[in-house]
Length: 182
Image (cartoon, rainbow, N blue to C red; front, side, top):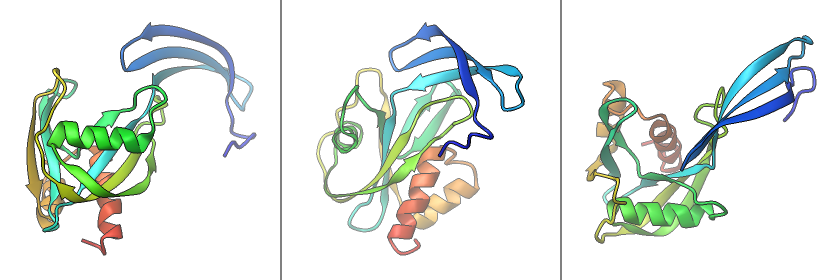
């Protein structure tokens, strides 16, 4: 909801980079105080993330090297929306590509802004249940390993800093609440 007392009014916008999954623009805005400021904005078309829950209650994760942080990251399956793509269709595609699993039951958990200070990205979070295994088909630029963890192992990994991915932590927290407070 826009609060007119706090709103920043765009005065000028300049695109400085166009990429495959994101763009960068620099906006000049009028501040509520009357002054002006620059805002660097990463434009992102959005993404989905999935908490895949196995019949034994364990959760499926992927491990992959994340170049930006220079480390292997433990995460729930996720992926970027194609232009105009339905989020649930994207979630189904990403779950199967990254893990090989298909789900008979889906629940939308919510939507987050991972970094609203500089990015337009929204991530739509899902929980997938009644999983059926199959072969993973990662994209050619993805090197993934699939693993599963119990809820106690998940909370321990978060507390110890072995699971640091924000979208995963939020989605897992919401899923645990839906599953009765795992």
